[in-house]
Image (spheres, rainbow, N blue to C red):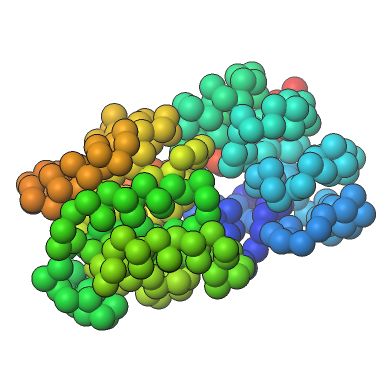
Amino acid sequence: MGLKIAVISPWNVHCGIFTYSEKLINALAEQDVDVYVVRLSRFGKKTPELLQNLVQTIPVDKIDLVHVQHEYGLFQQLEQEFYPYLKALGKPVVTTAHAVGVRREIDAYIASMSDRVIVHNDFCAKMFSYPEKTVIIPHGASSCETVEVGKAKKSWGIDPRIPIVGYCGFISEYKGLETLIQAVANIPRVALLIAGGYHTETDTPYIMGLKQTTLDVLPSRCHWTGYVPDERLPAAYGAMDILCYPSRFATESGALIMALSHGKAVIASGIAPFREKEKLGALMTFKNVADLTRKIKRLLKNQQLREKLEEGARNYVRSVEWSKIAEKHVALYEEVLNARKQ
């Protein structure tokens, strides 16, 4: 008999944590783990009563352990109501902290109420500050095929001869797209493809402001796709010669990892989680607009360097394949359960 766990996560919504959870759960199933999905609403107001009702849906007699996918916005500062309900079930609790270091008091509480806390990289482990509870398990990835570049560009109405710099992911203020727009504006005869939207609305005031900026500084050189469904992702990534992730802050980036999964050359801002991947040869980082402009020009001109980054991306993805990540989770679950027995 395999392990039986309950995973608390957003489900079937436009949300990076849902995408992560779905991939992990499918990989765990391949490891003979039975998973009960406990759906946490991604949007809307949370109340203690709502969270209590959610915990009451967990089939306690059918599971060995509860695994929480945590991000600050999901729980709206109600962790001190939520976790006691979980602890009352008498089952071990593992939490994956998808963001850390922003609200230290919440981090401390999660550490106190969880048997183990999973973070995705060394930066997060240092920021979380509870080494006795912390386990690093990288964000998983799967190798993906892309549509041939010329065909992909044509599918978006783009001349195949035009070099394309791209971004693909959710769009919000901290993603730093202003930096990317400024850099591309400095490079004649290069176009920008922005693939993605917000979680709910088609456009937000912020996105509308960005679109106006591209009309002003990149007239006829920027194409916005809006939210890209899964079946169109191979064409979106295929159309991009290089991708840029200019985030001002991140603890990890599922969107960036998806770009690496498609074997793309990536330039990312020089924040700590991305520098970790640069040291592994998975991507290149930049310091400011001028540096990003130089590196975009360099990559577009130097096919050998671009291919080296593409190979680095593929190598990184092979190192964090979901099957390997699932194995690490199973080993952690077993360690937690064995500790409970002692």
